[in-house]
Image (cartoon, rainbow, N blue to C red; front, side, top):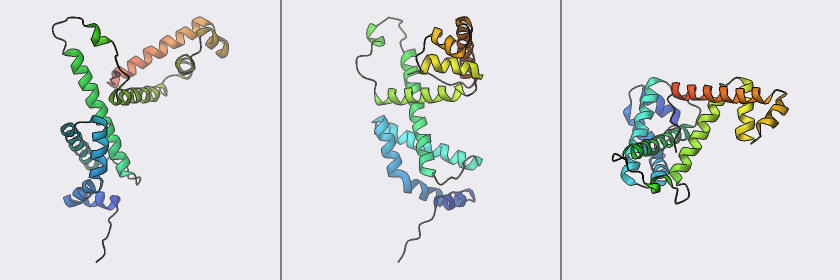
Length: 195
């Protein structure tokens, strides 16, 4: 008796044509790997279950909307969705913790980092850097250049002025407008940049 392995593309096509068992086959095929990945990030079984389910709800909605581009990388796409949901969870949790300080008492231990960043904080920081780098592409060339030299190359404004053959005031102005434009894009796209 031989087993026929159906491709992911065919399973997706069958699901979209109304065969819901095809989706079940897809989920079962990657269930262990995906759940293990989520659990390693969140270290809580109940939370991992919730994020696992939310991941597949998002997968189903994306498939039904016709937004999935089949490039033979289904599991990588699903794991990216899970990764983003984990980051969203930690961002919301952090925001809730900040807002939870109802009595208004200041506690120095709330603002001092006593340990190295956790895996969650590292994931969030990594995602923030990725989000900001994508936004840089939308800046005018001279603003992007100054911001890159200052923030990524660590150059002084005098060095930036010399390198770009402009005055220090022009370099400062470009940096200022770059930051204004970035803040505007972050606000418009409702990107949360907190760790």
